[in-house]
Length: 324
Image 1 (tube, helix red, strand yellow):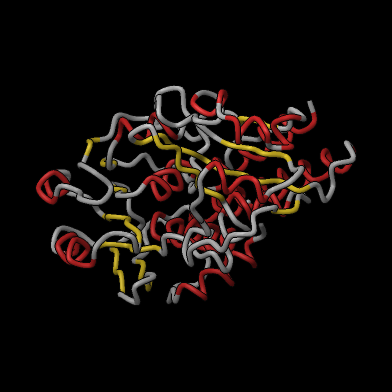
Image 2 (image 1 turned 45 degrees about the vertical axis):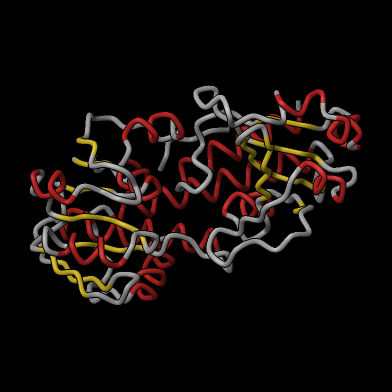
């Protein structure tokens, strides 16, 4: 089912770009390759470029994924090791400079790269963004929006594409993404799983305590699940940006008989309490979905807050898990 990481018609792209405040009309990549570009980013700031950015730094993994998917190898990436661990669906194809952590990028390291553009998100502290603007033009995209998680993800792809002269690639990305979801929905429906309740989560162990993070309908993965024809089983309200909630193993008793799906990472020993620490927990073992064997760990490497590539890989993985 998986396609190469490349989405919806150019008309839709133009509408999303209008929402971003771009002052340039949508154009073919070849035609815009040497033209100056003026954009308005998520913060309302005007971003002016002499032409499509080629030397680009990404301070957050979701924008790094979008850059790679658009065919732009970033020269600088925050926490390169972490990206390589958590996102293998859209791997780095070059060896970018590590610019520090996602929350505190190194201004000196970024300046040494002499980038054409720095792409960041609204999660980065305003003071850090202000410093970055002294180094190079900064394109700030909205980190996430629980009111429309998929729409926000695609809007960000479009805005980054405009800044890098890759709008045709963005259109292909969106088209393939939509096709992947449609194919996954059909596969689930054919298996009699349309409308099945799903509870997606991740979990961590800290000081021997298990924390569970439900992905509500406002999460990106929650929205993808619903597009696949599944029903979100979580009753908790997620946060306004990422649609995430918080609970513990006792909180799972509210779920009832559902398909419980989670993600972990073999390189992070604390990231799979459902397959390790909880296996001898009496509350966990008493849960209906545990008793029925409806607990599924999807493949590693799909960044839960990523772009079209990660969400395609996730869709492929969850469909395979539920239909096996």
